[in-house]
Length: 311
Image (cartoon, rainbow, N blue to C red; front, top):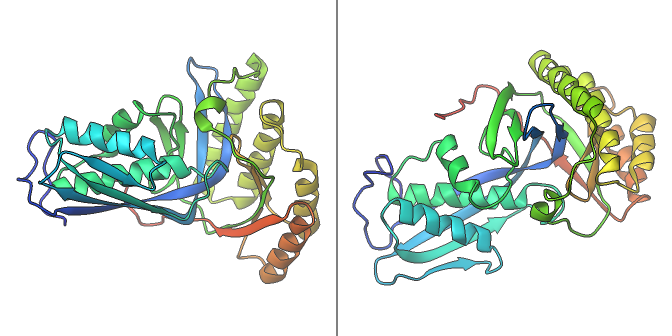
């Protein structure tokens, strides 16, 4: 249940059977990911999609055991224990996660699980966890995507810290291709980045271009920057099908190609506002299905009019 919110220092009394629910959206890869010239400059720009992770926390005053279902989501279980201990409520109960995000594909499934879990526990206890406080908890678990924020954001995923809020884009569609397999995000982030000083300067320029494009709601420029980022990532996590997906994008008149830089997916970005859009989606999906068997269509989220919440 939800109730009056407070701070971590003063949660409401705990009642038997209290329940909290939290949600977090996923992403389709990143519009941009690389390394800035500054120290620890690893960053990404989010592409939120209409798929979610939903966490439900059912507390119990009778037992000190905290369990998780599915059982393999141990990172979310660890996060819940950290938050409960920090709130002075190391109580038991059950957490259930229901996610529409495939794991190991570059869609922020783990990040969404963690953020949804943090929100579920906070809702059950009646405490306020602003984004910066959640980031502090997440940094103790693993590198994390910027799914805390209802916007397109630039995010330091290894530092688990917001770089900047870029804003909201008009709705877009992604026709996604999955090359197969899974990528462990933690292991990926341990790989030394082969980017040169010139590359880092280019990434800074790409971030500036992306920020301007989001501010202007310029989907064509967003697509161009995303495509360049996908190409630059080939030295780090190459996609075998990138050239063919680029060809599909050109053939159907797409905006560009977006990559799951630390995942297994590529996508053709489409603008639903162009004439002939349904035929464009069908043509892209058909062409992509000849590249890989696992093709899906995703709707990107637009956040016009939504507040950012307290940091």
